[in-house]
Length: 243
Image 1: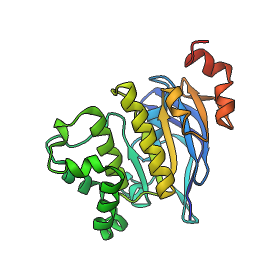
Image 2: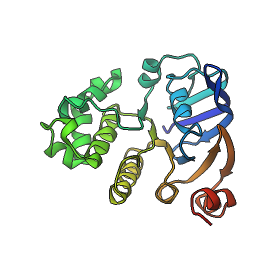
Image 3: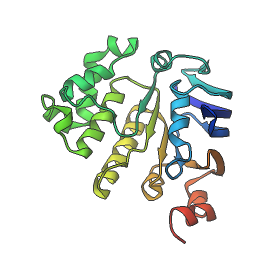
């Protein structure tokens, strides 16, 4: 059964500094939804709220996984991960002095994933053959594109139902950005994932998005109910296309 994510009226802050305000987002089962916004507008904060890293001040975050509703508010990050929600963080956050294989094995954290570790590892190597080739290489010695593949592979090792991807294009050359976006789409299609992706590269993100939202100064400024609506929005044209 597919999984979904519902974020309703969420407020969050860092001390006295408001980060996001009254944010509501719906990611339906099997969708790829993109959260568009330039740096400092609250994309990463929302991702951290979903994962329990940043506590929300108001609102609710509910995940439906295999037909069961789970209120994520107040849960620990460990509990949220154990439900099958994986985050590929901005900047990848790998263990540079561990090998590719060791980084992947650390991704199999939740109990369900540990029970099927061998199968998940084989799936990961099949999805990302380069990681299988470099399994003994230190993660810190890999190229930026390879490290992003490793970060995605580590999330796949979790056997997730819902995949959150935060700024996958950061620090990558344009050709590698395209390959990374394609890899996210392949993972989504192949393993029937529900995906929420935060990204500021509109042109690349829209290639795989079913629909999306624009966040400005911590608030949802626009909801595009399709890729076409996003393409034709004046806000998008102003901030992302220079029109």
